Length: 352
Image (cartoon, rainbow, N blue to C red):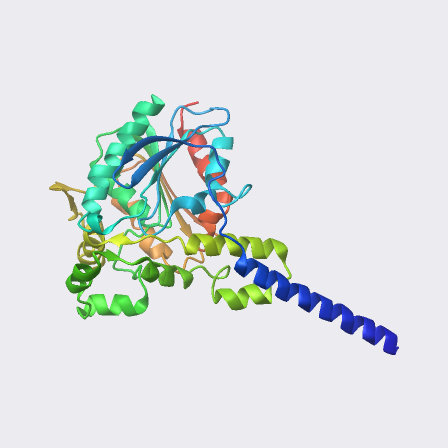
């Protein structure tokens, strides 16, 4: 009996030792390299880059154009082999174009949301259409990138056949897309944004990182405690490491974009009201007639359904679908299932 007890204790000690070893090994490992899916650069403007991900075997004539958030890097869309949105789409026969905003510098501090829509998204879509020789295009927007995509679609002269918004803030009166203490300060006028932007020019990545660390539960909430508690699980530690690399890669937001986000959207809620303008042109969502898919996550701590769903009533699209699925805000991007969701809907709406 004492021998059995000693063996059990030795086994538990060995497991505990391996857990701590994997914990420290994960912390000390180098950053993961994202971007395994084959791509080519087709256009560049300032810090922004338009990437083309060619279909493995092309099945559809309508290419996909993806707009990701301004807050963080789009590498999460190519998270890992087997769980990559981009890989999943090209394997299903779609030509995909991704607008990568790059990393803004102090010299970019005055770039506004209007500028990003009119001078970047619009120009990049035009380039994607020329490069693909496509007659129409599908525009997919994720998080704040979806807000910009909807703005663009409302003023676009380019032939947008399909518009997809995923975990996208549309009605900013519902809840804040920033930490609660920021939200209260903004609404009560206690945050001196002009002084803040005058000093920094940009919203530093450390602020963005702090916000996203708080919303990436359950994968990343209380990150180091969670890693230690599950360090025995090699599959989990690899996923945690990838997530940690991505989170540390958040990018600054230009002062011009942050001011407009605060004044025109957060405070004024002008997009839903049809009052938002882009270089003098009204970005009224009722101008959108493209086929529409709006996706919301059931456990989204950042963008709840009530904030995304109003786009359904705002647009003039005859073909429109609202889809509410399991998962949180980041889960949709870091899993391959989003490619399947897009394919299920787009395959019937893309010329073969």
